[in-house]
Amino acid sequence: MKKQALLIFTILYFSINGYSQVCGEGLLTLNIYTKNGEKAKKASYEIFAVSKELIEKFNDSDNWNIGRIINNFSEQEISQNEDLDNRLNKFLKNSKISKSGKFVDCLKFRTFELVYFPVIVKISIEAKTVYILANYFGGCNREANLIYNGHYFKLI
Image 1 (cartoon, rainbow, N blue to C red):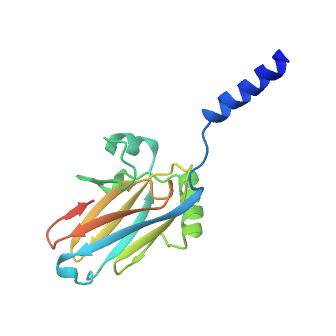
Image 2 (tube, rainbow, N blue to C red; image 1 turned 60 degrees about the vertical axis):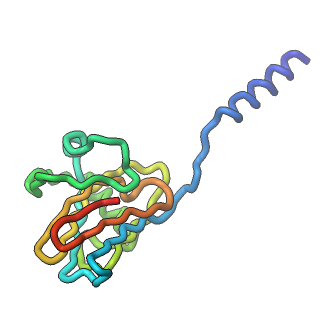
């Protein structure tokens, strides 16, 4: 009887303190807002896979929900890595989004809860460009908002 009680107690203890998935997968929407609600003109995007070294260099917080704008970034810092590019291509295919293209008001990424695969998204509107480091293929449903007022970008 004592062995059975101990077994039941052990099972209950670990099931109470256990972890489980919240969503499995979801959708991240990156909304792009412009001044006075006008449609973005000459708006394009490009998505880059990034190495661990770049993540460590530019990540100064754990806020992967919306990402962070990278200042003083040069595309020459992105190293060519076949494994990272292959993984990125798989995520792009699942999200039904191309590596680069044009957009009007948002970009949508299919996410997988337990995935950690940060990317840099380059957004260009008119003659201005911003680089955003984020885990856009990981996590659950969420939204990130990029505001462009004609002079600078703000991510919220």
